[in-house]
Length: 420
Ligand code: DI6
Ligand code: FE
Image 1 (cartoon, rainbow, N blue to C red):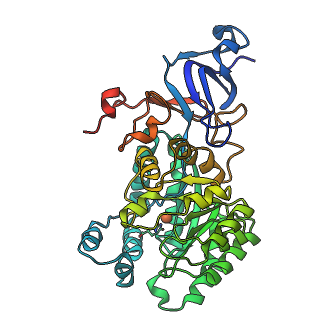
Image 2: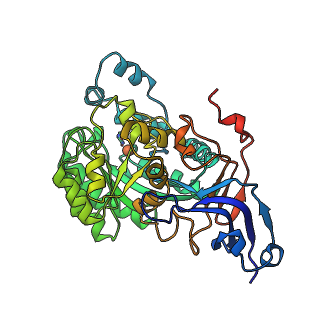
Image 3: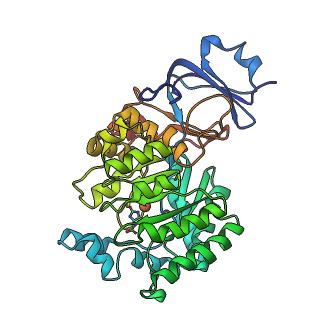
């Protein structure tokens, strides 16, 4: 069988080697057939002449390949913005106070409810297209700013459209337990039961849910409340993940581990016991340095303890209008290194292999290995550490999704990497 496409004269960070290594192949070649990686290795070991092996051969002139980037935690499907709250926080009002006065998440809920499905889709597609231009090939998108059947559906359909219109894979997460909707007043048990018994099964039946998330925090939902939802998710065969211990230790790590969650996200305040449980459950710690930066937090996640316990670490943008108005993966990797002291190799693994694991998709994406989806990004850089080095990231030269090259960015010259 002839391959569809063969890329030669590249250096690859496969991320398939031992933990902590880039899994580098020098003077490499990668082939795609039927959307999958058909061959990867040193060019000298190709089993024949490129022109005989493949219908098309592309010379990359020494550029670097990495797995396509994976943004495994986003809230892309939102409307509006919250710069007024940014000003309030700078003037000394806390995030929690803004939330308690009906701002915060609820202000975005009002904006999402007011937006037409078309407008919400347009906004979501534009953000996803920007991620794609920055090398992202898979994105997770959460609901949670609708909090009613029609509005959560509107968000999840906008997410679904990203996968249909753009060359990207989308993982859709239901975050109905994000905040109390105003129409439920203080009837917390009633809302939790509504989410678990009505919204979740209805949206799952429409094929709109790949995983279920909840916001476990004193300003949001408690571990016992979330257990009700997670039991319902389990009954439907859906995996769970959790916004855990971001602002305080709410027992989120232990809760996530108890349900064998795909990921426990944030984990700034997760206790030693919580970390040990995450390790045992194989749950990924998904770190979100932009939210830490935005809220000017001073208590970083327990990175040394996560490492010592062998908990895998992914990183993501958390793109949302309240605590993480950001898309750029390069900036997130830089923040993970500078604020959390990840190594650049851990940061890249966090945006590729570990992000894939956090989505339950490691069998399909996240490393450059034969048999996986041929998703990769092509970079003009001196080596993979440079991807974490530029504070505003590097724009990739190109991107390949399921074996198909997508347009190279017009701003992809080395000069464009300089901060402007
Ligand atoms: N992710 C979330 O869902 C919350 N914080 C976070 O990091 C709330 C986001 C918001 O304020 O809208
Ligand atoms: Fe989030």
